[in-house]
Length: 263
Image (cartoon, rainbow, N blue to C red):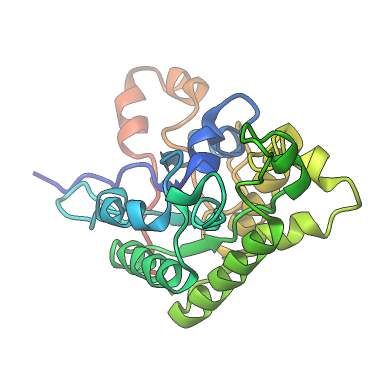
């Protein structure tokens, strides 16, 4: 039997609640999936509340190595962890806190799993924290914040270091959000930690720009043939219909995406 064309390419996104919630209405992964619909499948591997210590054992499952006639490596692996690792060790979320050195080692090991699966990998720094909002919303007495932006920034710096050491590109999401005009906390974060609609939109645009300019996937854009990156999965129904009795030939001859090796 002839080898079948590879499956539709996958963008695998591995992270915590910011990733898990990304498929909610107006979420960043929801927007990304719409951008690449019928070009690539966006796979959500987000685990709410997880830090790198707990996520590391799941990494080989999130990034399985390609095998078999139908398998292909991920078109892109996206990793964003650290929002929970950066919890204050003396705060109300202390059980989630992971020391900075362990965080870097865990993140490096997760990157190794993604690289071993094949295809390009990108790291994202965690979003910033609105410290005052976290304190105001705290249920503890007296009120104490569970996170701080200073800690989030330190863990974001660690992501940059891990990426440099592994030769993996890093998109500084946290830095980009902090560079926004004053009031970014209220605009980009819904509770001082998780993303608002505007925050999700900004994260989506940041990731989509990286994909369009620095990977082979191209810009996507639902309903079009893209910009020379990906072909649409299967021909347009109008082309199938117009082919009459040759419709199966048209389907069988459709050019599908072929995986490229990571550069």
